[in-house]
Length: 191
Image (tube, rainbow, N blue to C red; front, side, top):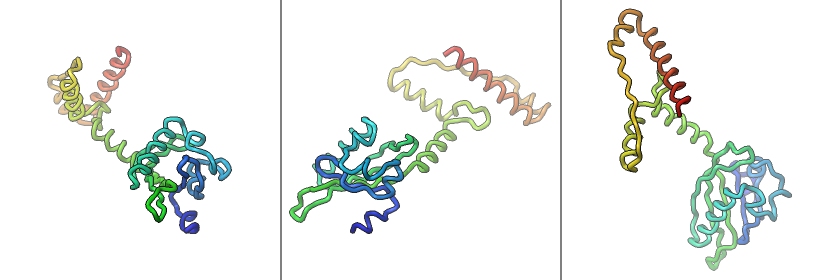
């Protein structure tokens, strides 16, 4: 069992019911830049930020109370750039009582970055960099639902097709980008 535990490629830890770390594999130590001496016998608040520690303890308590595994998402790492899914697993004695909590940390940073980029693409016009029509409609519906005051600025460039037809679409695209940049700059100064 120990060979299996220590050779897992995902960070894994085991804590006692007081919340003190009893074991942490090499992947855990590397992920958080810690030595065994900095981990063993310590609790979450001595290793992670207060916010993360509270959520970790909450996940532990849920697993202990339910005697079943729980899954929580946390942004934790020494460099604050990694996002992990935490699987909290109660370790049970033969009589069914919990004696420790195991945690498997699955790094989902790449998946979250892909998700962020997809959302950005979905919500942004690729030519101008302005918010997309779909995003604006979604926001308007949120404002209406929440009864939030808002205003809309709608610009219509009459006969813009004359630019495209006479100077070409490449020039037309450059004009649209320039207008979008000017609009962004203006709105940023105003608000």
